[in-house]
Image 1 (cartoon, rainbow, N blue to C red):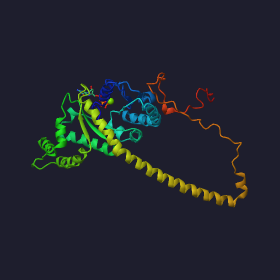
Image 2 (image 1 turned 180 degrees about the vertical axis):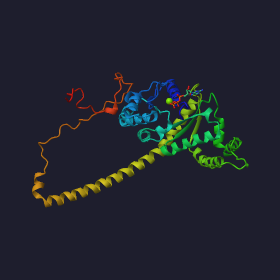
Image 3 (image 1 turned 90 degrees about the vertical axis):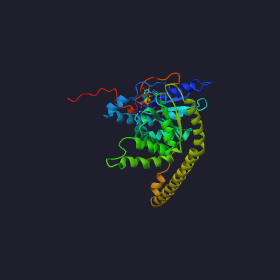
Image 4 (image 1 turned 45 degrees about the vertical axis):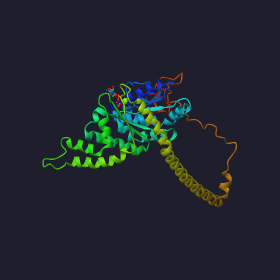
Amino acid sequence: MAGAGKSTFVQRINSYLHSQDPPSPPYVLNLDPAVSNTPFEPNIDIRDTVDYHKVMKEYNLGPNGGILTALNLFTTKFDQVLDIVEKRADTVDYIILDTPGQIEIFTWSASGAIITDAVASSLPTVVAYVIDTPRTTAPATFMSNMLYACSILYKTKLPFILVFNKTDVRPHDFAVEWMHDFEAFQAALASHQGTTDDEGEPTYMNSLMNSMSLVLDEFYKHLTTVGVSSMTGAGVKEFFEAVDASRAEYEREYLPELQRAREAREKKLGAMKEESLSRFMKDLAVDRERHPAAAEADRWDPQDGNEDEDDDDLDVNIVDRSEDAWPGQYIDVTRMRPRNDEGMAWPRPG
Ligand SMILES: Nc1nc2c(ncn2[C@@H]2O[C@H](COP(=O)(O)OP(=O)(O)OP(=O)(O)O)[C@@H](O)[C@H]2O)c(=O)[nH]1
Ligand SMILES: [Mg+2]
């Protein structure tokens, strides 16, 4: 959720990895186009590729539409990001992606899904869902936060770690208790105001939450929980232990599933291609039979080479800040193709 401490957490795990012996500097990506300052130094920053303010102005959008559109534009270049990242796979152990504040922009948009799938299909991936612990102490808030986490888990199907952040302000033991002890959570619900109506009957909200917590019980079995303080660094070691365990889970569960899906897709695509090719060949044969003169004229001429195949090579947009000479300027992907008439003075009519 916005303000849960995602960026501070990224900064904390970044500095933890730097302080290892030997240091293991991660590769950090900022995906928040609207952030003014990041507490870490990203290797790739969406802000180098798209100018969020320009996008808002050009497409006449508000802040959320602006973030979404900026993310969409960036996604069109994400294959380049993966190329850069994959080139570093030998020297870099961890790649960290910080997501934009408005959670739904990333989790419920096509570009969020494309980025997640692209990363997850090339590298072992884990989702860290950062929770603002001090702001999650009310049972109803806790539950809606968990439902959100649940929806992301089922959408991505990736290994998942619940990171209870800000434990320096409020330890997360209450949350662990609620997750493990269904009755403790029900008791917390019941002791909260507004759970019964004037006649002492449970309110709609209360009975809804009771049945929801049964659903969540199943969900809790599929995830790991850690409490951290991005402020003090407490719990970060445990977080990395959970990440290592998640890597094993990725390899055991996600990867075979991914390969199965890929094979099924390729098989289906192959069958479709074959069918349409054989239909095409049949049509062609019939056509040539009917019009022998036209068929004779319609032959490939070896003199007629095609030389300019690579004319829309746009391989310039993603900035890898770790490279020595990075341009350090915005490349406006909203206008990728230069206009032919740019720089021409048009005579005014009259
Ligand atoms: N006390 C305490 N404060 C924290 C901790 N982690 C983050 N904060 C504070 O919480 C606020 C929000 O932190 P950010 O890291 O910007 O949160 P975010 O989730 O990246 O925010 P958005 O990207 O805007 O959604 C800042 O004021 C941080 O200093 C923590 O562990 N303890
Ligand atoms: Mg942030």
